[in-house]
Image (cartoon, rainbow, N blue to C red; front, side):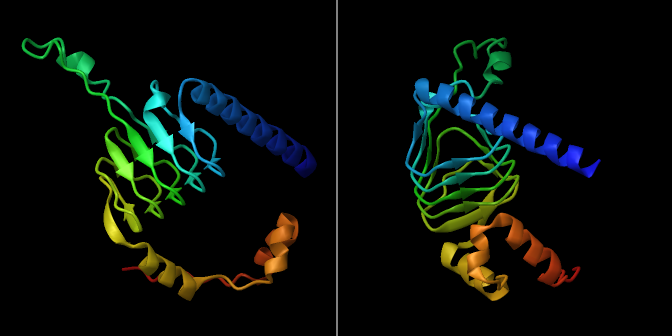
Length: 186
């Protein structure tokens, strides 16, 4: 039974990966700009105006991230006298070497500088300067990238680096050796 589950899981994952690749190619044909080595996880949405989005090299876009290049709610506003001509479109630019967490929403007229981290499930409505970490809803400044790196260095998992060549061996090592340390409740 476990073998059937593994096979189905691989097929499902392969289908989702294929679906995202096709969708991304369609968006590229509509003007989406992607730099080299951009990693786009599954269920990422570039909206109806992908030509308004630019993502620089070496950036990772987490699963379920949504880029919003316009406010669809202006349709409702236009039904009110005096607001018939309201339209709201804007560009989105993501710099080099950024990490966008799973489930994030990036709104129009936002620029993310180089070397930035946006935490999972964040809603970003303001621009982020280079070398910064933001998170939350709405996304707020947390720290500089170096401070975040220092925290990660103190808590990094130590394992033989050569295990990274074989995901199966790495997972086996983690299952066997990773200590169960949890953050203290506040």
